[in-house]
Image (cartoon, rainbow, N blue to C red; front, side):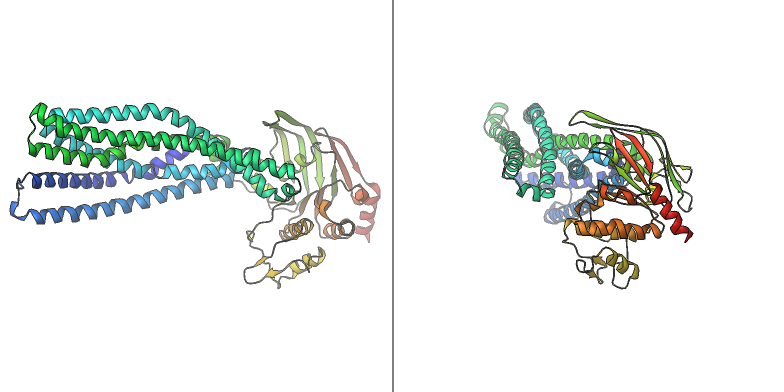
Length: 557
């Protein structure tokens, strides 16, 4: 698994240094235990007995410095691993296709990023557990030296606790898995609420339903599972904590009587047991940590399966398309299939054979579900054919050059998103003459405000104005091919007529090739060509002879 490999690769270079430093810290802590027991038993140190106070200070100071170095190194390692994991996810999304992203969904991306935070802390948890294990081994060795029988009883308690935790952890793991599923669906419902807030306010039933039947119900189930799991973890912790009091009781009242343990040995035994409680607790917490890591790995593995083909394409050598003027796009026996897992229905687009030529104004028509939007996604490279081939200027489009193909086309989709930042790096200042011309062309002079200092435009526009702004940004890309998906649907009748009769005419004069998915049949007469879809296939592809004649006359003139 990619994320597990990243974890290993990031950690393995640090392991030798961290292990050596961790062992040294653990031995120093064990040395403090030995020093304290000797002081209580009034036994002098074997070396420098007259400077025992100085030895004590040196051990504490050295332990402090080593702990500081160890924890600092682990903080850096943990945050570097977290950075690597998040960048790996973002890198996969960067190279993923639109189809992969549709299957993935926003909620799985958010959950995957949360899962990386669990994995990132694995090295720190492991090394703390490693250090605790060394202390436990040293303490048990010391107990066996004091009293083998007492040491066996302590070891038996530790083993019993471990078995108790493992048995109870199985049922908790199932609940945690269910909790993660609830988290996924919660993000989906929350996304619906935030992006569909207007629609929710338009229906009392819908507004109440999403709140009560979905969001609250989901959170109630999540809360109940969290409470149940937390109580069971609490039971485990209380059982573990109070088991030590039983061991202390046996040490104080049973061992001296049954095995003749002296007061000095009993005191040493008690101090060692008290010292053991912390490290053993660290080791016990490995069990819920292991459960969370296991679930995180399973979820990230699912994430990777969905975008599994991306990893092999990330480092692949891409092949740019030939830098030539646009002449045509050709579809040869292009088919596409899409399966909706929720409705269990499959959409099939039958073989498409068509060609789009430079300077054409093509209207794509058809009813809902006819395949016109799917054709738009295939045309722009967002969807890739199930079979068949697409050519740009007679150059075949392959996985090695798909990104360059999509980069040749500007598009304004029906659900177009306006970004919060100027990611394209456009000059969006008042001094940009081309920008000002486009703003005037789209009649947005009064609605738009340009922020020259931050090089961006203000938002807060109506739906129709947002589409106009999207058109301005698409024109700023200065690409020869323009796809419009129901662009004029939100425009008022006056601007819609102006758009079809004036704006499109100007864009065609500038050399644009325009493919418009539209239902505006009042303006079909201006198209040079109309392609109609029905049930996933082209049922008609007609040329408008009068429009072609007008274009020829205009060119001749």
